[in-house]
Image (cartoon, rainbow, N blue to C red; front, side, top):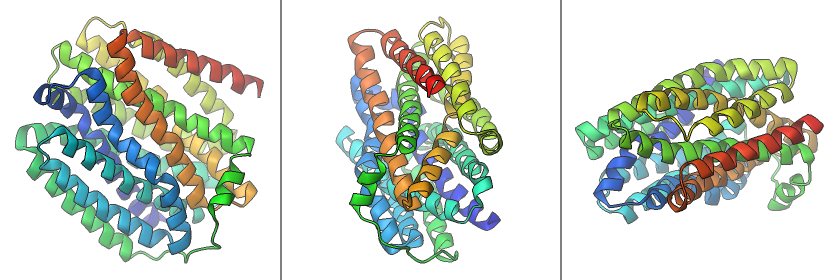
Length: 373
């Protein structure tokens, strides 16, 4: 179990590291290619758009051929597209590479998480998911550092080196024992699962933090750049926030195993409502950086209980875990993409306050619904 947790943790670490590496580079690409906030949002949204397109096929592939081949295929594609991204010389190529990275992520996430949950005792499922998410958040933590290194050493050599590391993880997965493919399930099983209220609740509680982080990842780097922060400083802000988030994730998972999923979800909704109401207003870079760190912690509380809710709901109705995590990808991807592209476009048309306050209202409405449920 420990070796499997290390493998899945390493997979999601590298995955989210590649995803988050764009954050400190976004102002650079915006300046180089003359991108507006909306254009920067489209570039940021290309990765989750790939996850969205690949979510259901990735889950179905994992069910039919098994978790190990799916993980190996995903991490190999991730390595190739990351090297390609490093040498991109136009916005279209950058967006295409990020989109393909998202497709690869859909494969590794659904299969890797299903591999881990299938081997976990039910009373430790939240803890195992939280531990894997802690590794994923640590990858998001190191991603801005990787982006900062790329801004100094060059994107080509930096992303090529990490792409080779990803290929090593594929070899590790090949050498790890995995369960054979289970009973084949079709798209019909997935559609029927959407009728479960527990599944519906889990999906929304994955969409919402996707919206929150997607908006944060576009508007904050651009605002910090306006306030005098460079790529390395922007990366450091997200590094600190993700560090706290990574430490908290396993503890939140254990707490949700013992006390239920509702209480940490209520905490996440309350904290997120307050922080999104505050984010538009800090007049200095250092004050905004403090709020961003707190926001990363508050938004991150959602992940463990929401994912556990989805996996428990899938088990109740007999849905394969790979398809349950395909639903998680299907939920996260549009949330992240709409948060990035929609938040950037709405901020360009109005002000940064409008998307943030809309998210605050969404959190408050969800909190009211959770308390009544």
